[in-house]
Amino acid sequence: MAIYEIVKFPNSVLTTPAKPVEKVTPNVLRVLNNMYETMKFANGIGLAAPQVNILKRIAVVDVEDGKGRLDLINPVILEGRDEEIGPDGCLSIPGLFGDTPRYRYIRVQMWNTAGEVIEFEETDFRARCIQHEIDHLDGILFTSRAVRLYREEAEPTPTGKRKKNGQ
Image (cartoon, rainbow, N blue to C red):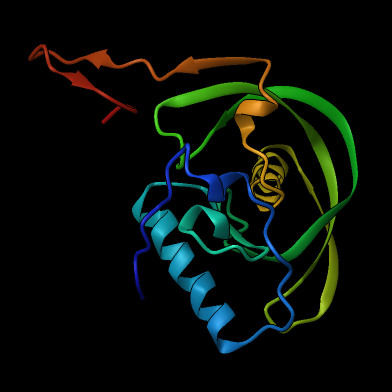
């Protein structure tokens, strides 16, 4: 496995729509595995190929909700319902967060790792994360959807040093 470098904003690859995968190959599966390792290494819950400078419609998601890893190949949202505003953040824009409208329910069509077209439904936080990653594949950043942006707050420790994310 390889850990990729995560592209940071304002790199233009982040706002460039990705091209569809034409066929699931061993290389596509290797890229998905490397992206998953990269996401975990960076303490992320989702990662899209453009974030590692690969303009293909692939992404990985694992929100640690017991459902496990989800590999997205050529995903398309077919239906979305019950929009709500909630938190968004991005490995490509560290330290910045936003209150972003997303659907609570989505129905998605995509290819699985065998190259078969499948559909599935998802709700709540996992649906939010999938929508965020599909936006990346369309060249859309959460900052363009957010109704409010804010910086991560650093908490002081007993030693007076600042810590982030409760670490």
